[in-house]
Length: 171
Image 1 (cartoon, rainbow, N blue to C red):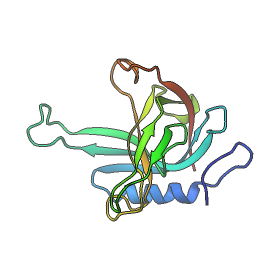
Image 2: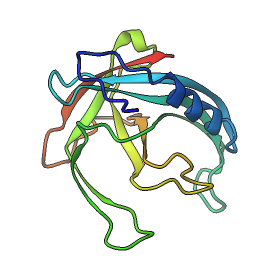
Image 3: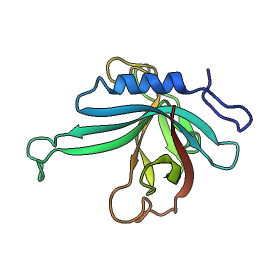
Image 4: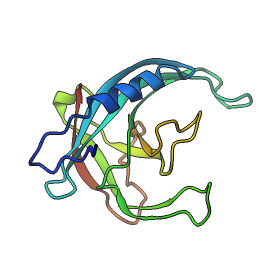
């Protein structure tokens, strides 16, 4: 089943979102994980809905870190990369390698109804490839994180990022 929303038909992403939340709850330090749908509103053909999970994780810095205090990180685990982020995907040359993603300069602005701070979010990591136990059991995925430092995501970049509105809803 495709989880792409073409603006003409609603798509049920609840099963994928629930699967993400269930898996995240098994990981060390994950305090909470709830299934969500994320609608990327590009205003065009790349608008889509992707299932995922909003999670909070408590992490401990590695030994020798300047600040050894534990901290919490919030993120959204998406079942795949948003189309508005991907310029093109270069397939792997050899079995066992992952694909290379050439990205578009985008960041994301949750709407106020999402209940999230409305600062910018960004793709902080992704995996494109087949499912691999135990680290990538669902295959392709992406991680979105809030930009929680001073300034904007694209400060210091050569290109101004496109801000894509997103709606994050519980499913």
